[in-house]
Image (cartoon, rainbow, N blue to C red; front, side, top):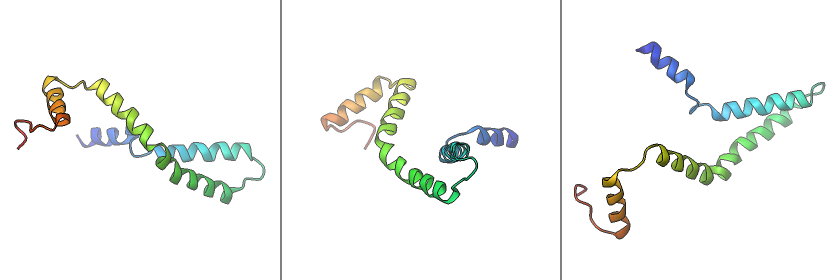
Length: 96
């Protein structure tokens, strides 16, 4: 059980997307500026990108992931009725 959990954690990319993007960015930067690598300038630029990009693209990515989730996990009739009642402002039975 512990071994399986460890493998699942290693294969999970949920915790590492920023690290992967920064690693790819630094690798491309190193290759493009090969003999004289401006490390400090590159690190500061990538830190700025890492701080600004989530703020700028959050609404778009949230919408896309919600659409994917709804496509994969289609709501059933009870969930649709509950959503319609919530939009109409009615009290739904079962949710006191």
